[in-house]
Length: 178
Image (cartoon, rainbow, N blue to C red; front, side):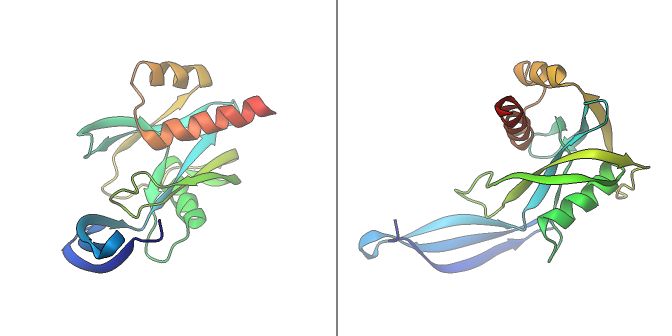
């Protein structure tokens, strides 16, 4: 598999959230191919559990789905920002968490076939809450759900977001192992 090499990246478009490139890739036996790449700074998401054992979710419009999704709080890392700082900022802005115990659960690449995006998933417990400080263009509603609610909503396809399902299932698997 070491026979692949990125030869050159040609910028196609610089966006607000990501940049688009056409790449020339060197394959086996000197063959080259053109592949598309979306460069993204990555981000973080959090499975936040309050003192009553309820999970804090958000309802938020997502342009890729063209609908309001029910998902865990998440956000894009700003330039030079590590994922730990990113999720602390996002929790403050979106759900009003001013302090908590924060643990990295796992990291993953949502679609490595065409994007460089990496997402870190955290678990937040012992939440200290205050008023959310949302961005001006951020319209979302917070919802608290029990474990059973989440299982039912996944089964009914009311929760379809991949990072949310992965985070919840990882949490449940670790909880079962204990």
